[in-house]
Length: 258
Image (cartoon, rainbow, N blue to C red; front, top):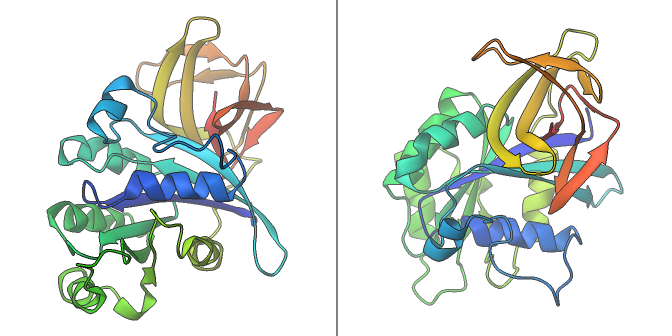
């Protein structure tokens, strides 16, 4: 678990959250520059049409830090639109840290504040990131002042980036491994996990995205959902790397699918 980081990106709508997520995917080598397309994680038709993230997605990013350590970064993508605050709150329960993304020209806005408070309520590590610094209208000093006065965060810890131009991506990834704590959990305890997304595959049946807090889930296990007291047999577990990638098990601290 020491080499795992579970994090999310929270932001006001149109502050560049999906673009930054796509840059992480590109940096991890999960998609070639030739095949790269915007909003890789936005898979629903409505999401692509409206340019917003509605459901919570997760993807596991391999990352080798500057000191040569290998990490697995679990990015749990959340909606940025105010109508989907429940999905944001549920996804944040699965994280130890967040990137708080702020547009360098627009500054701190209503949903920035609301999402920041959600993260604070859950005692998550918050890393401020000022995006779109390449814009002529960018005012980094003003935004830093807003981060200080409106959110109570240290503006000097903010990382400057341009997701569109690919600037500052490495610095953000380094901050994630250095500032966000590794997950806690005990693999020897009974299984405990939270579901933050679910879908139906006509060939495989129900597929749930989850974060495991304690225990380990393996193929062949029988699991019980606390919401309806129903039991299910696990046919496959794994992680998401654009496609589902099966693994032998999901231990405490991991985020993936069942």
